[in-house]
Length: 554
Ligand SMILES: O=P(O)(O)OC[C@H]1O[C@H](O)[C@H](O)[C@@H](O)[C@@H]1O
Image (cartoon, rainbow, N blue to C red; front, side, top):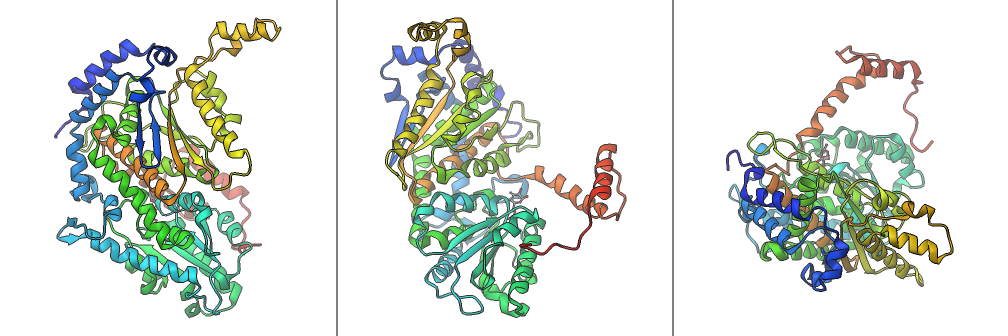
């Protein structure tokens, strides 16, 4: 579709007119007048309920939005992605994270190779290794059992596995504790290793490219820590290091035994790679059976996404309603609030998934995009957010749509705590939708025998949209469904805006400049910079106390 511009389609024009009609309508009136609203505006999947009814949409909105999906040729793009067409045009790559959760017998060919078989060959090796770590069969150089696994990686080689390991902590049953180091700030590695023994520690160096400087520097420092702690020779540390990468040359140059390199493939983007061998930390934590359930959950969402008509297709509805706020209500951000302590890293994970995918302003045909693209994704765990920034959602001046993710059962119920947690989540969605009128505020004050002077401060505009995603519990299966749901949401939005959701040229520029500046901090090199950057560099030189590399853990 050369020069495709969604804003020039009749569907977009119809939505603009429709927006004029309903922009000022209040959801509380829709609920009062229409008792069938929830029934028509929710979807039930296996172990999941998604409630779209507290959104600023009518049946007509949904109808018009589905026409927008058709105008963007969504069905064809979806088919092309699942079939392995090279829809990542700028990198000439297929986009096949969905192949990683296909049944073993499926066949998807890219350049004449069946990638499903390729993926399972790598996955089986990683799963078998994880089981050997869990059972104690894989031991360290001294013959001791591995007790700690430290994953060193960043971006897609960190956020997915970290979030999943934390969310599924109650499934970690083998006495192997998994930790994550991502930041090149020495504090991260030093503090993570502080209470560990080298003899019982395994490092996973996770890097699709194996060229990411932060990861390589941390990996080298981990190697030095291990040598310093044990006094062993370099040859002895092989059982303590494994890698996950597409770049076997670089892993071998780093000194990692080829039998301990688990392959990944260029047809999986970093931020979509938790289903691949990048999931090794998850496998070490929850084992083969749990990981296969995780893949099966994602597969169930893939099937739903493939089969349901737009009007009942959960990721498609999430995406379309997101476009509605982003492009017609001019909402700049989207909050995601998991009411689950284990899922506290979800927002950070989704920030990469969504913002690195759809933070683009050029179309697949290299033309400027004529409308706003991906929103700012933010949020954090409920209920903590209620005691911090929810004031702004309730009485601020901005439209901020949000997703509330709420499990019906906790792995740690502790008496009444789970009911209190869930009650808070539901109460927030009700309050955000209903609001409170001036009359209601005055009546409340009068009933409490108080002056009504403060009534204006107690008014809540309401009409703040929320989508509730209820899951029976956070299990490997339901977590797989949830993550795949968001992956497909991001994909659908990328199709509507006609951007490539699978490259990330925007992160390169800063990386290149950092390479120039780093030696300048040590007084070498004199590249051209603006006055501000030059002053920052010289302030560092004046104030930095040069030390030899401080020893880890001291
Ligand atoms: O796995 P790696 O090759 O080390 O990449 C790690 C991360 O670094 C980059 O800068 C990209 O922006 C991310 O998409 C990627 O996930």
